Length: 194
Image 1 (cartoon, rainbow, N blue to C red):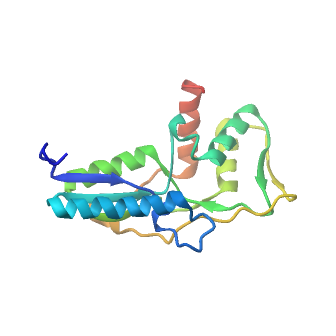
Image 2 (cartoon, rainbow, N blue to C red; image 1 turned 90 degrees about the horizontal axis):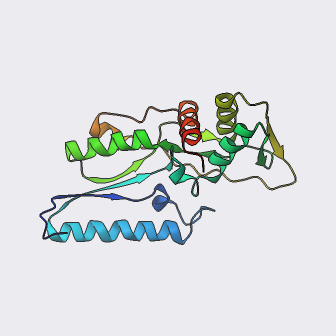
């Protein structure tokens, strides 16, 4: 609160706040995130509080994110069971995932260096559902395969133009790639099964 003397506020938003209205993924969630960001920035300016808005891409790495990253955790679960991993349509859609360890490093750097502004917080590389499935199969030494269900419609991509301005400001990048991140996620799930 203002009475407590806070001088720097870090707002966790979502990369979906920057979706155009033409996107098939634009919805009330994306709109509410955008409006929330604007409201927080307005209040911060009014009260002279430094503000950083971070808009992470899809976060994964602990069971907490299972509900929001359904395909990633489905792929991990199926590979652990030795089952095939099914992708709807004829192609593997693209997504952008950031591991919780990378996100924590970014937040620590933002606070330490008192970087302010509104920033995209995404991994430098996008991953397809096939990349995720292959990483899960490899990490579990599964006999399962990636299969496409061509009776279903293709799933649209949901990726954003890469913006490195946050990482240039803090002098670090997310460096956990999808293969390493899936391996780490799988090890965590085996320690703390659902």
